[in-house]
Image (cartoon, rainbow, N blue to C red):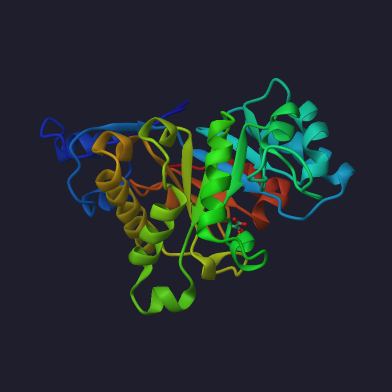
Length: 291
Ligand code: PEP
């Protein structure tokens, strides 16, 4: 079983035949489209489910148990971001499994008079390992600014938790060709004052807003191009090594039918899955992607 995805990049010592020997044809084709990179990176894939505001407790427990079972032989890491009220109970279901527990949001404050808010300390105390920040629904429905997302991201990191920072363009922005610019601005703002060391606890989820919950998935080419642009941005803002290490997930209507081709792309290191993560059989197939 392969637990680590190896990405052949451009070291002169790795010939195209070596890449072909390690990867299926689709992967090799996608790899050939990617610009030269100076070393070989090994990144562990991460498939994360985002349950959003769905499930009641019995459903949550049943779904978590199904994810636990399905993840036993999964090729990468697995996490589920569940509603706040179910974190502790789900944590007990997941005990002893490889499935990480995640929250969908957190407060930028530590404690105090913030009615309804949930701190990173609270999340840690019930076994959370991951927190989502910058999800497009938090941006658009709850009006979260890049500055607030940055505060939350830094709070997650300073608590020692892993942060899945979501970025992505609107439909109009993709259509007018400004995707890379929009995503770069979200990265610059979301990662402001985040050190290279802290970046090691960040996963970027590239989620084109037009693909979230719509049934429209970015093509592997569209997703790969933007993932490569994200990696290039990180290389410029941090270093080639940091860019090479960074896990970048794709999110936006991922299904069992689309996951393998997406995961075959060299810069796609995982998926953030909404709708399909609520259906046990579908998520089971997604966590057991073949690439
Ligand atoms: C998401 O909520 O992050 C998401 C990608 O949702 P969906 O898979 O339903 O598009």
